[in-house]
Amino acid sequence: MTLLHAAMVLIVYHKWYLGLIIFSGAVSVKMNVLLFAPSLFLLMLKAMSIRGVFLALLGAAGVQVLLGIPFLLSHLVEYISRAFNLGRVFIHFWSVNFKFIPEKYFVSKELAIGLLIFHLTTLMVFAHFKWFKHEGGLFHFVHSRFRDAKSIQQLISCKPRQSILSKEHIVTVMFVGNFIGIVCARSLHYQFYSW
Image (cartoon, rainbow, N blue to C red):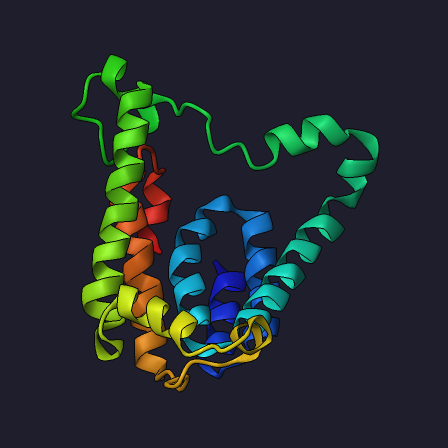
């Protein structure tokens, strides 16, 4: 979490590229940091050009490759298949959020898909009605990015009109997005509630 907080400090001061590299380092330590990723991506779209977002994501991917080189060279298939295993089934015993659900439902694919749909829907609702309300909502913001571009080059390099984000907005969007992820997480250890 120290790496995530360091990344957030950099992002609050609009150091997006370095912030995303540190964020990627945080993900490599503990994947729970990925719960911040949808919010971070939306903030990047708000503050940066499409090209800037792509380059920042490329830098983050580079960190993952660089940190994974020892494993990629010795156990390529195993590393790729297990390092970011998002489809694993968690043990019911360790669940905090859904301990009240019987184990046979807890481990079901239907619950996993339902929680994913609820997670994405809740993020979209918050993005549309809260985080992008000054831009006319998420869909209007995305549409305006495409509508204003006269060419592919302009679309890629054009920054959004309102690219100045307040520190409060950045922190709120990041932590609310994380909280939505925590609520929708099938299994979390107790210590993760502390962050």
